[in-house]
Image 1: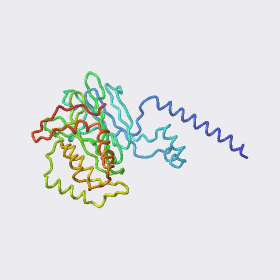
Image 2: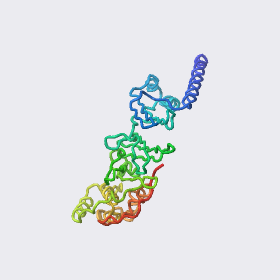
Image 3: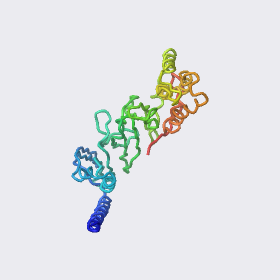
Image 4: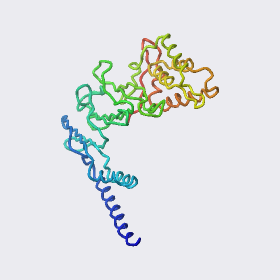
Length: 322
């Protein structure tokens, strides 16, 4: 009896492998719109097209009923998770294309779509697209240059908040507000935890930290001491688990990212509960603060901010772009 069932199973398995191989070969031919055209913009010889589908295909609904191993194989082979896509054409020839998640679209600056706008200040038209990312409302920004040659000049990911183009210094060229993803799921590993934001500007072909725009005056001494007292006397300190109130870490980073690194380190000592963790205090500080700062692509350019109300800042330096 087992032999009777074995032969049809072999045929089924062979057929699945054949379909998978054909699917891979078909997908390798190039970009295929995953759904209907939902947005289209034109600029001189350029076209930007956004596609998106809203419903599951019949195949996906079938896959949902299959064991997870079989369903996972189908996901990798047929790519049914490609919900959206974008393609950029120049003189009707595709020069860029990619697939995205639930949302991918043309980025906005103010009330206008970034197609043919100059958002870098280099006097070269740009195209910018954005894509949703993560579970906390984050996203990615992709910037292209439409000069003598079409090329992608920057990719910025922002897991904590959707990247936003906004003119903060009034020069007509937008800065970029994004989150520092080194602090994703920090200080507690769960969604909804605060992620510090950074402000970037375009300089010398890269996005760099705009330290002057991130600078804020130091808090009043009375308010800072009151906050340290609240944290120091909190009931959340737990010697058994070495748990420290998260507010200690988040307020320290807020001080550092507004231009007051030394005050931030001082705040750790002021708000620390006397005797907590003993000789292991430094281990906790290294784990929650130093390790994240070392992981950050932005922190090396933020923590050297001059603590001066006159904003005498050193020159901006390049940070994470592609």
